[in-house]
Image 1 (cartoon, one colour):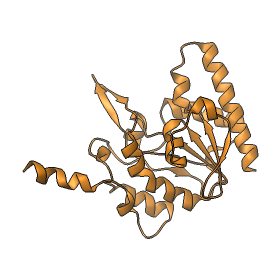
Image 2: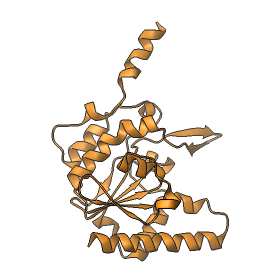
Image 3: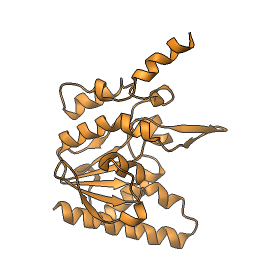
Image 4: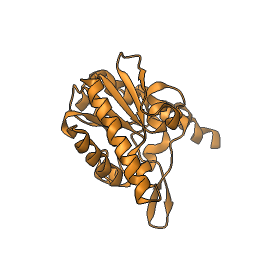
Length: 216
């Protein structure tokens, strides 16, 4: 009995089998709602797909939905999303002109009392969800992909990335787009002092300005 119950889960190692033949964003989003490519769907409220303009010159990729994103069904609507919106505004980038998504489409968390605390996706979960991100990139056809944080960078580039070492740099992507490495806005929320937060926020805005110039 134990072997039988584990067998179906062993087959769910990738989202690839759930990809639709039609590769419009609407078709992808509809198909992603049924994705069982990894076990995260069992615990999340819903799939949170990317949103925004298509085609777009810039795609912003984060790690995964957070608590508010999981509840509302939209990317970057929680505290980190509000910080991202402020940074985009100061960088002169309209959010409705870019495409915003995450490397992993379901919220991974651990309960702590009544709260749900973000838990970093594992390599197998990042890999399992990558087909969705790759399909988004093929559909949106960006000139520049901004990877916000280590999970996004690993998913887009297919390797581990040292954020502080490669932050602000532009790297090639196999699609022909450029890739820019930066921090995830949630990292700013974890800084201890106002001075640190202001300094790193200004640096983040500066990097977004560079991204805008690079994308043309």
